[in-house]
Image (cartoon, rainbow, N blue to C red; front, side, top):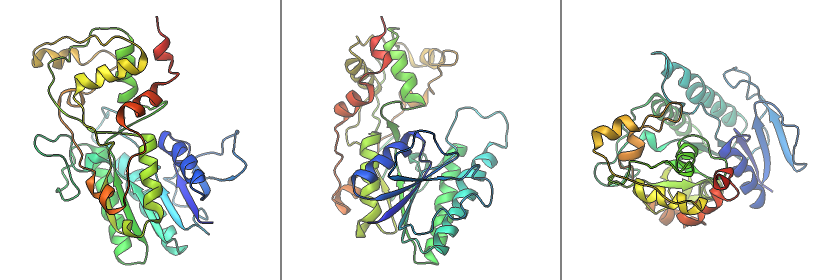
Length: 319
């Protein structure tokens, strides 16, 4: 039975990935900052502490066939100072580089790196992003992911490790953090949303679809040394997304239209800031390459993914 090391296994995507690999028949070694108390008996847990520590990964990759590297410092909004890129690099680049060298020394066959569509850019004013587009990162998080990709490609090129890079757009699902949760909360609150006039298209991927793609990348022979963009395959406008979220929550979508300059002011509501560019800009992803090359099909459609993501949510029970 093949064995996979999943880093960041306690995170939103990590938990889903552990379950998906177990279901697919893999042995799982789950790397986490500290060992959880409620552990599944068939999972091997590895407490690695602070992965900025040069020795954090020591011993974690022995006997592993594939590494799925999810652990990262994610984008957390505005940064307080100009050194933010250095903070991203410490985890997203340097810790990744050290893990790759550990994997190389341990004879790991395949290394999967979860990157970000932000490497391609923050918006698509024209055609959807593809793997052939020149990288145009804009935020420190995306810059660090691009640098990590470059470091991994250099290591893979001088070794026998098969590298797979996966770039998803916004990932949603049960208990999803970040902007998806904020938008769902905003919709559930019943407040009228000034988004009816937005005309854009954005791609998303459910966490179930993402981990399905990651499992396929782990052992498919045609995934080796490839970069894949992944998405559900249904692009929606922001008003359509609001209506779909409202339907999944059993709420009424309350939308109204305002001039875009005024929208720029209304999009910031205290601690519930949803970046304006993620409300009105387009960001479309062409995921045809992974579908064709690996014969991968997302198991969930967008509406079903939203329903699962919000089923049982306390947001649906607000009165």
